[in-house]
Length: 107
Image 1 (tube, rainbow, N blue to C red):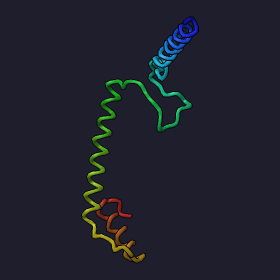
Image 2 (cartoon, rainbow, N blue to C red):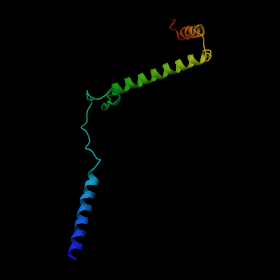
Image 3 (spheres, rainbow, N blue to C red):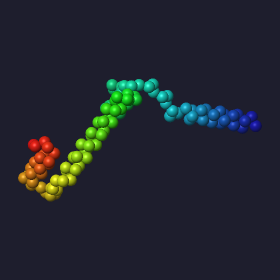
Image 4 (cartoon, rainbow, N blue to C red):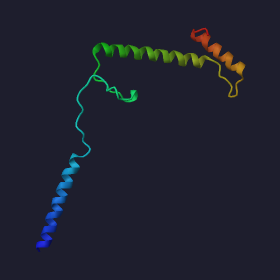
């Protein structure tokens, strides 16, 4: 009976260690708070802390202006005649000039 008891005690000990190890895996410590991105972070993965009220207002203004620009671009693009799938260079040139004159660039 002594051998069976030691096997059971060993299995319980292994199970307890495994359970303890599993509860601590995959939970990294929280990073320290920061207001700047690390210089080594790629531009697509940079994280910046909370915005100041002035920065938040500037961002909101930029987003409004960007939305207005995109809406204008879509409106102008929809007003142009569509090009055929196999457009000639002359048709493309007329399309570009028409687009430029409607958008105000005059190119």
